Length: 296
Image (cartoon, rainbow, N blue to C red; front, top):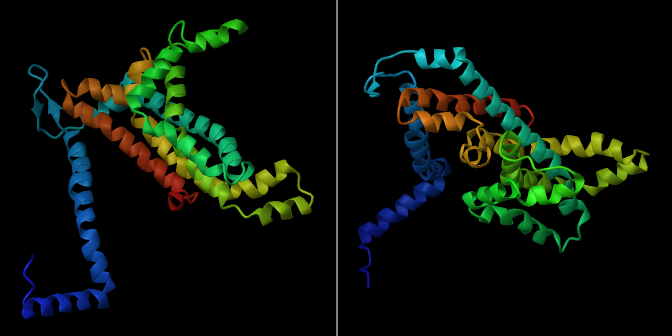
């Protein structure tokens, strides 16, 4: 058995407990000190190192990093047509995936939150979350089999005289939409579930048609949750590179360029890595005006 604390030790513990009880701010500060240190040192520190190393250069003969301050990497990003094209394509893919997720997620979330019987709603939510339990690579390679020549997509479209999209940019957008769709459904489902039924009844009593009720009542209240879900779908799609390598064919996104430059030109890879960070920060600032961050 553990020996009991001496009287002096018990007195010290009581005083410390009383001090923490009387000063909730001190108690809160002690609780969040460790997470804040982790955020500042490991997360923000690594981003700082990434940003600083983007200003270094590489010896063209040995490929060794030369810690000399230079803006050549960012100049190349802005002036080289290939880099500009890849950056714009990456942002376009992220926006396309976000738009598709919103279009698909809204009717699914409306059914699970407002139409389905209450006893079935938890099971439907579990069904929506089930794909997240599977391995990322397993899901991507499953889509590779579906979209491959002679695969399930070709088999289903063959009676209509059509064929599957194959590997390329459409395949990458389709696969990313499947991967991140649950992150859009859940916030919309929560918002629709919390939507007061009295508002819908009042709109109907005032003679509003369903389309008018959707535009004037439902959409304004659910829009912050749609924006909250878009934060996940946009950021996850913008930083993805494995899906594009597996089903994207010859398509290149920012992540692929970072991966290909990490061995030969680390400063350029760091400069490319700062692009998604800057784009996501700008996107978060834009979404903040919609109230999306409070819905996360």
